Length: 208
Image (cartoon, rainbow, N blue to C red):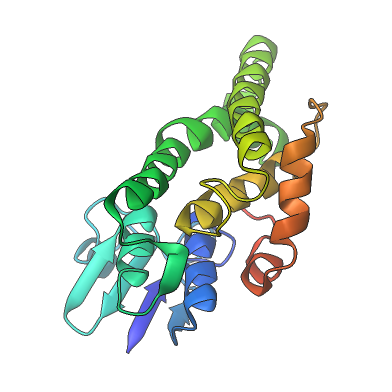
């Protein structure tokens, strides 16, 4: 049995749930872990992930953490199509944008999200908020240029794992209430994502 551990509101958990939907993979979801639920610092959870982070994938005696690694693993089976292409250069493009999402895009919205959505008192410095908004707009400008070039999805004409990871962050950009630049290619991209069952089901806003 394939089990996914982590609260449904987590953007990283929702990546994995969406991937399972795209791949038609059966799974059991244990949503009782994370902020507002059982602490991932509990000893039984730390035995699965010493980083005390969600999500965690458990398949019998196999345990895997880090959401983008889980995406790659799930899509690496035979007959899984274009989500994670086998051709090395095509796959490298998917990996490039998955890594960009984790290293550049998500950190760019962290301060803004904590300040505006979570109303965290530790994230209320007006100057840092403005800097965070500018940084986030900068990463979204990079994405907008890429989508303008492809005219479809992040890496090209085909939907891939990169779109699962980045698509949820696009939803966060559009749903966070602040004045933002209008990126036409990003807006058109969301329209395309809205045609996919997994995005419609798992793009709803929650906590990071």
